[in-house]
Amino acid sequence: MHTNLVGRSTLENPWASHILDSLQIMPHLKNKNQTILDMGTGGGFPGAVLSIVGCKNVTLVDSNGKKINFLKLTKKELLLSFKTILGRVEGLTHLKYDVITARALTSLDKLFSYSQKFLKKNTVMIFLKGKTVREEIQDAQKKWKFHFNKSQSISHPDGFVLIVTNLKKND
Image 1 (cartoon, rainbow, N blue to C red):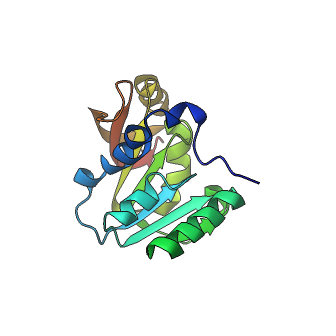
Image 2: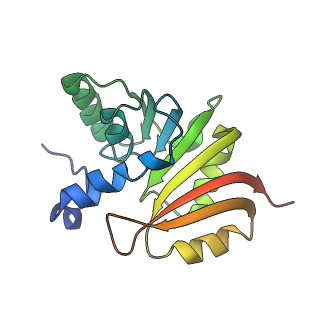
């Protein structure tokens, strides 16, 4: 029995598709002690990679038990310190984070809906987005107020790193 951790199309260059893609979050972190929530982590991207490079308070959430079990085994084998939660992000309560990340999970509007209950006063959301980022921003602006900075991905020509702060629901 096996579990697909990533899409077959991303296996041609896994270093760029997964590792480098995850690592481009690092320059946007204030320090490695910040609490980080990786929503819909899948195979551990970007959350497990951030833990490998020294982030100390990373929580990985996914609803796929096989992927969470793989991550628990990886954590044990590599002596990592991230936390795993098996469940849907919508079901989590009473948790607040300094940084929220997601990669290939859902639209920006849904990411905001998921994220809002985890926000502290100065939480930064770092989302790795694809070529539809401009349309997703415009769509999200219909329901949300937020500040953002968008930069070109270093791992994929169609990708972007979207940094979002000051998220509030429109009145």
